[in-house]
Amino acid sequence: MSTELIEAPAAKTGILYAVTPEIIDKQQDEILALKILGVDDETGIGLVKAARKTVVGWRISVEATRKEAKAEFLEAGRKVDATAKEIQAQIAPLELHLNEQTEKVEKELARIAKEKEDALYNERLKRLTEAGGELSESSLRQMDDEMFGVIVEQAQQRTATRKEQERVAAEAEAERKRQLELQAEANRQEQQRLTAEREAFEAQQKAAQAEAARLKKIDDDKLAAEQAAITEQRQQVERQRILNERRAKELQDAETNRQLDAQLAQRREQDRLDQIEANRLAAEQQAQRDEEARIEAAAAAERAEQLQPIRLKLEKFAEKVRAISPPRLSEELAAGVVLELAICADRITAIAKGLK
Image 1 (cartoon, rainbow, N blue to C red):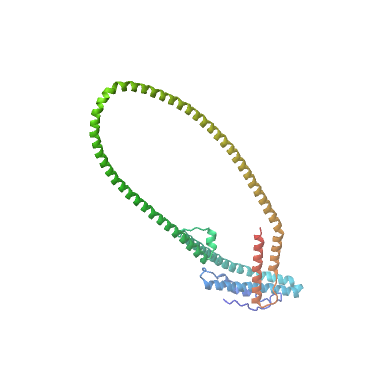
Image 2: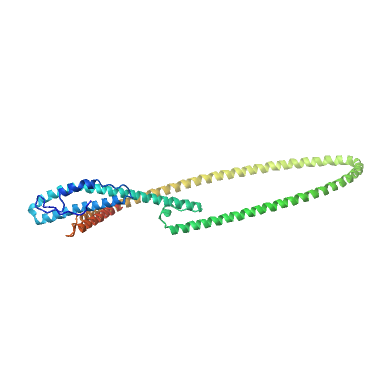
C-alpha cells in the first residue's frame, strides 16, 4: 500500500487539502484490512506502522491546512472547519484501528518480556537454593548476572565448608566410637582375668572359713550367753535411735513444707505483678502505634493537598503541548513532530497522575 500523501484538487470551500474524502475512500478498506498476526509478524508490524504514519500525516496535514486557511480566510472559516471535521470523522476510525493493532502487539511484547523475567527469576531461585543460599525476590530480579554468579559461588563455598566440617565431625565421632569399643573389649578381658583370680581366691577362702567356723563355733557357744545380753541391750539403743531420727525427720519435713508454701505464694504474687506490667506496656505500645498511624494519614492527606495544584498545572501543560502546531515543514517532518509532542504530553500526564 502506498504511504505517500497525494495532492488533491481543491475542496468545496476552495481550499487545497492534501487529502480528500475521495482519497480516504480509496484506501480505507485496505487500511482496515491490515492485521498484526503476532509479535513475530514483522511484515504486518511494518505495514501497520507505515499506514499509521500515513493516517496521522493525513490528520496533521488537514489540521495544519485548516488552521492556515482559516487564518488567511477568516470569512470562510466556518466552511473550512466543517470540511475538516467531515474529513477527520473519516480519519478517526482508521487511526483508532491502527492504534488498536499497535497496542495489541505492544501488550503481547510486554507479556513475553514478563514471562522471560519470571523464567529468569525461577532459574536463579533454583540455582541459589541448590547452592544452599537464599535472597529476596526483588534482589534476585534486579541484580545482574555477574553479581548473581558471585552470590551463587559464595553460597556454594559456604555449603562446601559446612559439609566438610560435618564430614570431619562424623569421622571424629566414628574414631571416638572405635576407641570406646577397643576400651570396652580390653575392660572385658581384664574383667575375665579378675573373675578367675577371684574365684581361686574364694575357694581358698572357703577352706580357711570352714576351719575358722569350726574354731569359731567353740568360741561362739562359750560367748552365746554374753552375746545374748549384749544384743538385747544394743537393740534397745537402736530402737531409741530410730525413734529419735523419725521425730527429727517429721519436724524437718514440716519446716520444709512451710518454706515451700511461702515460696509458692511469693512466686504467684510476682507472676500477677508481671502480668499487670505486661498489660500496661502492651496498652502503651498500641496507643503509640495508633498515634503514628493517625500522623501518617494526616501527612498523606496534606501531601495530596499540596500536590494537587502541581498536578493540575502539569495536566494543563500537557494539554498545551498537545495543542502545539508545528511550523511549516514537510508533511513527513510535521507528522513526526506532532507524534513526538503527543508522546511527550502523554508522559507529562502520567507523571501528574503518579504524584502522591
